[in-house]
Length: 69
Image (tube, rainbow, N blue to C red; front, side):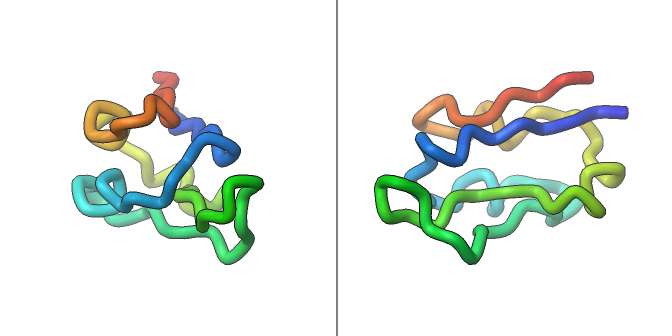
């Protein structure tokens, strides 16, 4: 099973990853990170839907996302 790992502390909430996710499982967290942004996350219950395509990681300008296959 693929797993996308987000470093919420570095995310600026640009939303590029949300726009490119083919299964639309990435969303903004309700909580703010230390920088004052709503970071992108995948809720644990949706992680099994992740395809491992790494589109989100390629689009991230701040290298926040790592995809493990």
